[in-house]
Amino acid sequence: MGGGHVYVLKDGLYDYNGGNITNPPSGTVNQYTMVMAENDGKAIIDGQKLRRTISIRGNSNYQPRYISVIGFHTKNSSDSAIEVSGYSDSARAHHIEIKRISGKDSGNINGDVAGFGMYTEDNLMEDSWFWGKARTIVMNYGHYPEPPPHTYRNTFRRVVARFDATDATSGGQNVFTNYGADDSIYENSIAIDANNAPDPYGAFRNRPGASNNKFLGNMILNVGNFYPFDIGDSTIEIANCAVKGTSQNNYARNYGQGKVSVVNFNQCTFIGSTGPIFIGDGTLATNNSLFKDSGSAVCVSNCHWDNSGSTSGTNPSSGDSGLLYLPRVEKGSAVDGTGNNGADRGANIVKRYLNGVLTDEDLWPWPYEDRLKTEMCLDTNRGFCAQGNGLYGGPITLTSYIWEYLGNSCPAEICNYNIQYHLADTNQNNKIEMAELIAFIGKWKSAQVNLNDVLTALDKWLKGM
Image (cartoon, one colour):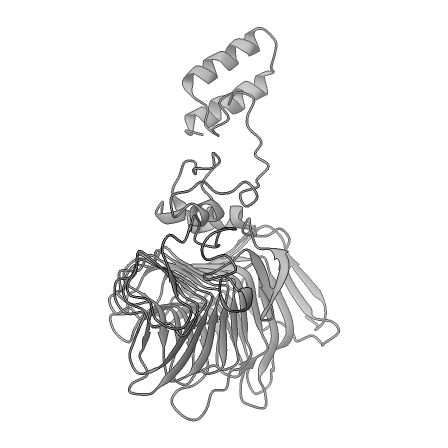
C-alpha cells in the first residue's frame, strides 16, 4: 500500500484476520490517503472480539497523518471499534478524518467505542454514530494529571452516541468524554436514549485538566441518570444547547476534585430538572437561556423562566415561552429575539456548525438517518428506535423523534421527507390495512394493477407496514 491513494472495500463481511483496517499509509496535505467502503454501511468489519476493527496507532516507525476513513460499519472489536493515537509530542497523529463510520461496543471493559487518543491533534469525526456496551461511548483523550494534555483541536461534528450498558462498575461512565484534551470542538452532536449507568458522570463530560473546549449546538435527550454536563477544572463554552430527559436534579455539575471550573452557557434550553442548574465549585455564567419546568437557576442576564423557579439576573422574563419543539424557539413568542442584542432566549439548533462557526446550511432532516436507524435499532426498539409512525404521519426517524419529543407534530419544513406511499396505502399512513389489501387485490383482478404490486403490498401487510 502506498500513501495518497484511494482504497475501496467492496460490499461484504470482513470477519477474518487481515480484514480489519490497521495503520493505513499516511498521505500528504494535498493528497489524503482514502480508505472507503464501496457503498456506505455495506462493508462490515467484524473483529470477532479478537481484532481491533479500525486502528490507526502511531509508533516509532509510523506517524499517522492525512488519512480519511469513510463509510464502514464495525462491530465486535477486541478494543475500541475506532481508535486513533499518535506516538509522542513530536510524532502526533493529525489530520485523520473519520466520516460516516458506525460502531457498536468496546471490547475493553474500561474502554470506549470510538475516539481520538493520546498525541492527536487537528482530527475530525463527522456524520458518525456509536452505541452499545462500554465505559464511554465517544472519547477525546489527552492526559491527566500533569504533564499537560497531549491532545489538541479535535472536532466531533454531527456525532450521535447512545450508552446501552457497561461491565465497568466504578470510575465513572460517560456518553461523550473530553478527558484532558484542549481546544476541541463538539458541534451538532447528540447524546440520546441512554440506559442508566452504575456510576454515571456526564452525557458530555469535560474532565479536569481539559480546557478551552467548545460545545456548540449539541442536544441531550433521554439520557437516564447521566448529568447532562459534567465539568472539571476547566474553562469551557457551551452554546446553543438543548437538554431534556435526565433523572438527575441538576443540568451541570463540577466534579473537579476540589478544583474550580469556569462554565459559560449561552442560548440554551433546559427542561425538566428540579434542582439548581449547577452544583459544585466554580463560576457559572448563564445568558440568553430558557428554563422550562425546572427548579432554581442562577442567570447573569436575559433568561426566561417558564413554569420554573424564581427569576434572577438582569432583564429576566417569565411566563409561557411558547416552546413547541426542543431544538428551536418559535417566532413571535416571548423568547424570540428578546435577549441581549436581539438574541433568542433559548436554543435554535436548526443550522449546521462548521469549525465552530454557525452556517446557513440546514441541519434537518438529520443526515444519513435511514442507515443510522437500521444499524442502531437492530436489537432494540427503545427511544427513537420505536416502530410505527410519528405524529407527522410518516415513520419514526431520529429527526421526528427529537422534534416531536414535546408532543407536537414535526413541522413540514423539518420532516420534509418525500414519502412514497404504496398504491395500496390509500389512507397514506405508511401502513397497509387488511381492507386496503383486499381492495388492492380486487384492482389486480380487474387488471388495474400488476401482480408485482400486489406481492409487494402483501409483503408490507405481513410485516405490519
